[in-house]
Image (cartoon, rainbow, N blue to C red; front, side):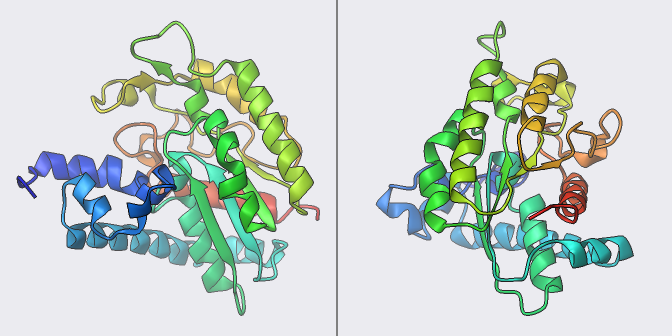
Length: 283
């Protein structure tokens, strides 16, 4: 490397970049995506540092799953969900899902630990900052080609963003969000046997997002609420239609410092909500 990163730069990498950046997802056609040297070079750290960061994030998700399994009601919900342990489970989402210690990773560990003779295949097709249009464009490659038994869809947050240079409109008109999600629904219903599991976008703490210099957009509940209503109108299993899982306010401890991405406790809340609704799913 040409220079050593400052502590501030490392903190930004650790909090806001490494959990949400996987080069193979961003650039799936690049031949060098599988090189162990490319990704850490882009991030400005060593291969050993990136490996350690990723290991710590994975361990955080596993520990969160183990903590959840200490709760009797969680164990009861797992006993009721319609999985036999051999399913391929995929998720189409954005950075709230791509997060290496996020809800999908916690759910993965939870099911692998608790389901007898588990032989699941988990596909995290979350790509940071994706809108519903971005996700629709890659649904064939990232979801359908794996022939999943279950698909989670967790989109909408970044449809509601307003760019700092264009505050007069959301990046995606609500009508286009509706059309994109409706098309995603039609595609998945045609290709996947089990009902779609929809996860609504949680609220954003706009004040924290606006004060973070690494972002070039803002998101408000005024824009995000209607998107959540569109998601909540879809057919399938609906997780948290009101976007209430992050607490009243919402609670700041359920987010990392940007007010946009959930913290570990926020992701745990999403897992609880997912399990509750899966236990009630009719298949």
